[in-house]
Length: 116
Image (tube, rainbow, N blue to C red; front, side, top):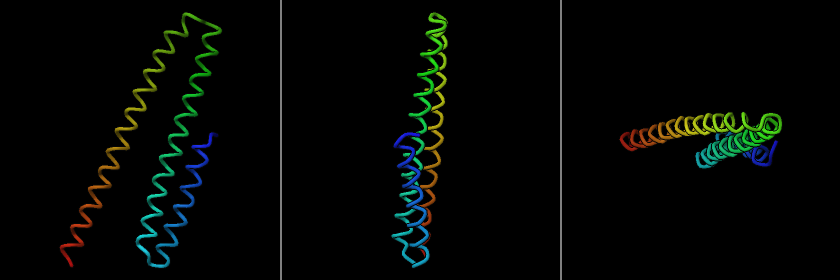
């Protein structure tokens, strides 16, 4: 486990607590700040997981290269491509969900403005 994973987990836990306290005392700002911390914590933890996975891939490639130098080069390129493509797909998926969440929030604000 690396520091980004730990920091992300802690920020997520802090955000949950902050959000709960905000809801309990009726503070929207505090609840929203908690939700923001949860999102930041999740992103930081995910970044830490990606770094950890990249490290594992690197170590596997080194081990494979020591055993099968020529074959490892071809497999490493293929594995690297798979990882990069997977990361890009994950990024696109996360960004789409974040865009959807922003649209929902915008819609909620518009609905509130219409009713006031």
